[in-house]
Image: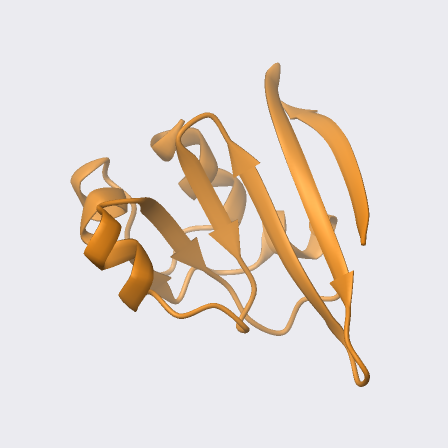
Length: 95
């Protein structure tokens, strides 16, 4: 597992990368918001009331910030996150 701390517009973020046999699992956490790659299901976030959005077709954290959000938990939607916005926009709203 690899982790990376960085800032998004001055807001601290933590990225986690887990290698799999054929790719990797990526997650960025910022404050109360989470942005995950396509490996993640929204069902647990819905059950727990977590702010979670998903993006697909990404290979690194920079890709995640630029990618269009596809999935959004109800808690994330309540913060104004909508499908189609970038991962960076979603993290800003969920923070």
